[in-house]
Image (cartoon, protein in one colour):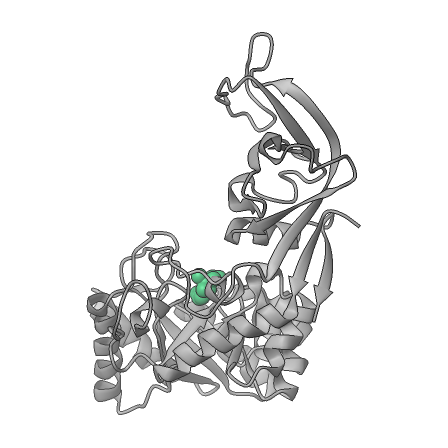
Length: 367
Ligand SMILES: Cc1ncc(COP(=O)(O)O)c(C=O)c1O
């Protein structure tokens, strides 16, 4: 059935091998993030088996609940990346080995829930180094220390470490200078409270370039003291998300979206009549390129993001689309395509997220 995502599990493994070599080679543990592909069961099975993976992480408790047993059977720990909702603390304590937190009120609820469950729950305290999403702001050192002091009083909570998230809301790029601030905060916490933090987590796919040996950096600039990275996009799509280069040893086509041509006709480039707004309220701009051969494929913005997919056939150009249709200029491919054929696309992060979330997109797997 089309549309579908073709998942090449051997390429997924090749990418896991590549990021594992880089991450462990830089003395960091590796957390693989499963949310971008909705914790797809078969991809998760490969991740759980892979010897380089230390933690499986997701932002949604529902995804973690589905694979917690498998992860544990394979000796991996589970991590909740998004700050828990107060209403989900029982599930968090049940399925998650380590949750990311920044609010004492929620940490206290986790403490209660862990007490009820007869467990000790690990938390990682998030520090905001300027990206302005979650975390206690790094300049508010008193608040950080007071929060740690309160956490350490809780009987059923273990302060496992601290971490930062960058290049999400504020698009801030991780560098030696900003990540060194995180390492300094960790050292101050350890010195002030006489504790040892097991983890100082230095970010996501935008941090891996700092380990060097890539198109951006020859040698390591990740500060010593960072001992964990959390990798989603860079392992599944092969992207360094700081500078847009490719992670050495990875491939970008482990996931391919394939959609079927339902109409193939030559038409002029410019719509006829007064134009208003398109199906999504946007005012499109059209370029007059004369008569073009256009394929309509049966996939649309309910399933994908048009600017987050690229035809594998470099002669093809996406012209636009609506909720159920994508229009592709196939003129340069001559007579190669006919109705009933399929067109393949590499996916970007947004395209992947939507394709895996859509109930209308099938999946096929190759070992
Ligand atoms: C806290 C946190 N860490 C890590 C990640 C993984 O990000 P990326 O896919 O860029 O590696 C995400 C998002 O998925 C996240 O929210």
